[in-house]
Image (cartoon, rainbow, N blue to C red):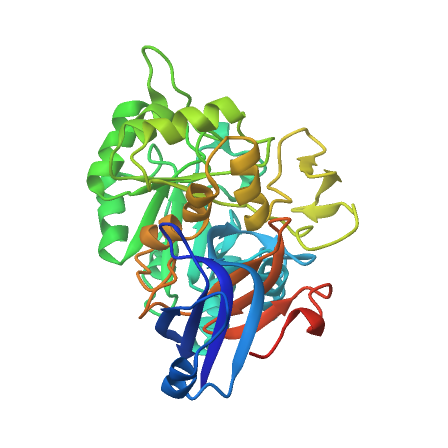
Length: 400
């Protein structure tokens, strides 16, 4: 199928570009032609035989990629490790511009891990839109830095878990672990099975973290949160993360998990492109009410845009990707361009998904249409419209 989108302005992954005709064939961008404000000329119409043209009012930006999504739309992956749950989560986050994500399972029984892996394998095999792989956040973590992860399920790595991590039908595999509890030798084994090892929920000292990086770990899960801090004589995990030129860091920009000044320090310390936005999203994302939910038998209470377990710990987020982008501009003073890159290009690069994160010929046609309030009007995956705001009515979409 061939279609052309006429956009007033688009972000190519590096900078905003003027009005253009973006042609999509079979889910891939096949041509981009900048056009005059007066409209399409006959030569362009003849060249593309444009019988399927849509004019989009707003700014078109690359689809957002989220490597840490626990839930959304009222669903929690741990509670329902099924394909239907994954679809519910994906649909909820598509309202906020997420076009690629990793369903994330936090620390749980090995049986639940196996069911989650089966669900993701089914999603990959059936080409469920948006699903890029799976993120196992645990269970091989540090008890002192467990956060809301259930201590009863935290354990050393076993052959059963290694077999799950080694599966070849899961798409992109990310595993968050504490390096003081998983040896460098085991990290090397995981990397040999194409696992991207992230470090987090850890009380490790600097030397242990560096050894894990040398063994092949290449990321840090929600930088600053649930990890040994940075001190003058004890750099800790945070110090190792900021020092590393090669490792990526996920950052939760919700105004609760990380102080804006702290986030700015990290972004200034890391090479450009090595800090990416993540949501750590929980079931309330995409829900209008303020209802609480249950996590391993513990009530998690929502107060506005903050989630806390009754024991006081932060328990994930009610953050979405377009919100993270806008917070990065308003709270951190970043340019809109850099915030967009942190939500699309940089996580795509971390996941080695070179076809994502840009609007350019040859790229996958994953788009987000932003309105003047910088919220999402429409979301496209592989050129297919998967979400449209009810306020973005037919009167806003004009044939050319």
